[in-house]
Length: 352
Picture 1: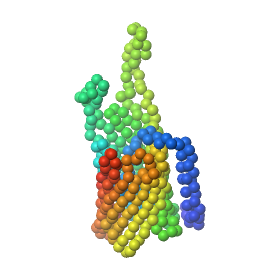
Picture 2 (picture 1 turned 30 degrees about the vertical axis):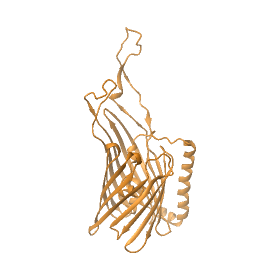
Picture 3 (picture 1 turned 135 degrees about the horizontal axis):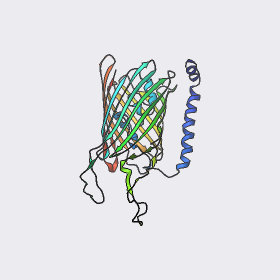
C-alpha cells in the first residue's frame, strides 16, 4: 500500500489524464450505439435515480466532485474517505405522484483514511384499488408497491489527495404479488488537484445484474387447444416476463472552493452525466456559506437535455456545532419539475 501511495503521489497529472481519458472513451463509445435514441423508460428500479441529500439537490445535483458529507455515499463514495469523523443522515421527500422517498445512511472511520458504513433507501406509496377491465371501479381488493435498496460502503484514502470508494447493494422491487431483485455496485474516485480548492470526481452507479419480475400474478390456466372439446382446458401455465437493466450512470465532475474571507466562502460545481436511459446532460451548482454555519444554494439540472421537465433548483441549510466534534446539520431543497410541479426535499444530519 505504501508503494502504491508513493507511485500515485509521484504522478498526479498522469492519473488525472488517465481518468479523464477513460471516462471520455467509454462515453464516446456508448454514445455511438444509442445515437438519437434516448431509451427513456427502458430500465428497472428507476428509484435509484432519485438523488440523495437536500444539499446536493439544491446545487442542481452537481455533487460528484463536492462529495464532502454523508450524501457522498450516493453521489461518489470516494468522498467519504476525505471526511475525518463519522456522520449519519436522514433524507425525506414527498416525491412525484404521491410517492414517499426516504434514505438513511451512516459512516464511521475505522482507521486513518478508511471509512465503513451502510445505507437504506426506500420508496413507498399508499394502497391502491385493484382495477380490471371487468371491474374498472375496483374489485374490492387493494394492492401496494414498494422499492428498497440496502447497501454497505467502503472508502479509503490512497494518498492525501486521492481517495476511492465503493458500495455493494441489494435492490428489490415489489408490486402486489410480484417482485424482482438484483445485486449492484457503485464505484468512485475523488482527486484533490494541485490547484488550490479544485477537485475532480468520477463515479459509476448501479452496475449490476438485470431485474425480472416474478410471482404468482404470472400464473394462469391455459387451454392449449380451444377447438378440441375433449382436452384439458385448465393446464397450469406461467407468463414469461422480460429482464430489464438497472439505471447505469456515469458521472464526471469538477468543484472549486473560492474563499472570499474568513467568514464568506463559495463553492462552484459542474457535473457531466451519462445515463443509459437518456441522453447526456450537464448539472451546475453554487453554494455560499457564511461562517460555515449558514448556507445558501442554487443550481440547474439537465442542461442541454431536450424535452426535460427539470431545471432550476435552490435551497439552504444550517449547521450547529454542539460541542467538541458533534454537529447537527439541517438542509432543505426545492426542485422545479415543470408540468409535474415541484419537489421539496429535507435532510437532517449529525457529525460525530
